[in-house]
Image 1 (spheres, rainbow, N blue to C red):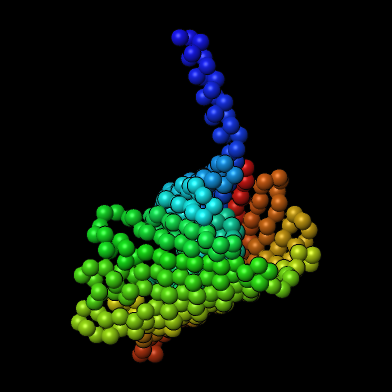
Image 2: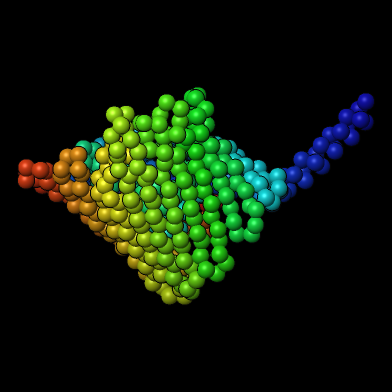
Length: 404
């Protein structure tokens, strides 16, 4: 009996050893915090403020046949007046399995935007600098929540108002198909909570991406907005339609154009509601040999209605030149301007920011970020001609990224 047990244990060790020999593990730690901050209306200088900390662990098995990722993030919201602000924490993750070259299944939450269509204008515009709080965040706003202007955001890209945004925070089952070289088709089925089947299906995503070798990438997509669900036809739009193209045929240059059309619909009172139109464009110069690189993005959306809510007319524009002082120190100058006009409030607002920051290779696998952020929340005016003075806030952030 003992001999049989030893044989079984040896065989098991050989099998598991072979499986894990093909495994690749990786991870990343991000620590971002605020050194000093202040308000243009006050001479007070505060220490502390916004914080963002994140830990990632990923694994791949069998040369990409399966794997997953687990992410933990903690931080606080807007505390730019010196207070830490409301704290938050969250965790998400997913697993995937690719049993055949033609099919892949993923279950869970993939908030890294892996399926998003924006190649320049989305998360990657400033990339991990925003997570280490070196760059003004694409995620959270500064200031007055009654006028939610996120002028510095890739908001019209990341939130799906110019380019297909991917699955984001959606808990879903993602079925991917690869029928021919260069073509990927995704069907995203939400599985959040417990609800009527037609309601879940009415929020599905359908996305197709085709990579034209040495030319570019074409994306088309549809995101359901609940309008085709049972008993919900008169309460919401059927969904949004996306189309975009990324051009990479020119050495050292990338350019993209994205469009979204929110389908019109009828409200519960049978009143026709207009859809909306959004457009976004991005440009990137990086020839790989010059120390100078440059990025630009602009997004605009024409006012309309979405799910019975009036939407604002918005225009955002950002620039991001970079100069590589050497292989270990890069200097960036991030800046932007935005304008919004609200039909509901018959008001408007213009804001701007400047955000120089640097990236330093502190050691193998260790990166350091720091900079200066100055944001003008903007002058807002209402239908009576009254206006509120703009308010300038500033902060000096720093953070580290560690890869292993």
